[in-house]
Length: 347
Image (cartoon, rainbow, N blue to C red; front, side):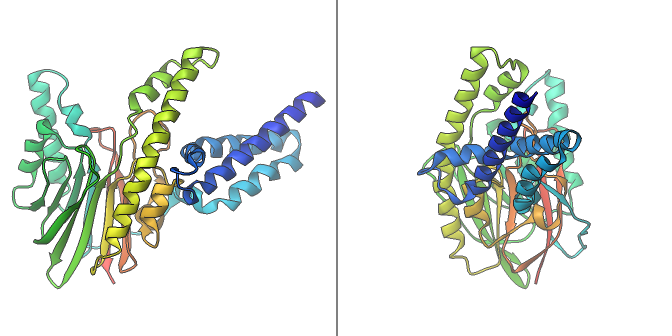
């Protein structure tokens, strides 16, 4: 019995160390210290494991629960990046922005011809029901979905470059626009200066380097068996891909942050960051900006609709010239991402 207790204490210590390393992940560039990014990715798992330890020690030996409890309290800010309880509400005069990765419209391609037509109409209807949105930032469109998207916003001003899959649609005039080149055809960041009658704001719509692990993760989760070599090879492959892509995102996020620093207008950065709040990418993008979910979100902040749990990778960041009045995650089933929507007032 003593040996078992010592083993569990040792496991608890390892989980605490892992959680602390996850806290440190935002401060270490994965191009130099890639291992921290792995712990940052697994923050939700490490958090839940430490909570399980607290419950275990409550019934076995009360004094040991403080090991995990104190560690979780130390990282309270990180917890807010995943779970929040806000009661803020938007106002009719607010600027409303939606960011949505539509996943190349893959959901529109499956089924019969009739089913495909129905799904396309459902996507258009979804956009129509969000008629209070002033600015849409869409990522991962494709040749298949582009016509559906464009026909959904016939009276909006728009900005798209070279069919990279990224759009900015605005009810208000776009007076300047451009692109931050990442040197790839699948990832991009567009920006637009938008004239809101008496004010001009700048909006960035980004789609950072994809992890390309969704299929691998699904296979591992569906066929998990820790005694099988294939499971561990699958996990190793996922970590290798994530590590490589996190290095690329670190460079991309620096480019976006540096470009945004030159903006002369109230600035918004939104889109698919493909990294969680406990990441270097997030820390570069958020910086002195406000994370809309932390300011006004409610509930668990999951924005990825795949099988990887508690993954928040879609964001709307605003600088301190904005007041965040509401933030919602719209759990529609058109993509492997959920749309995120915020309401803002220029101070």
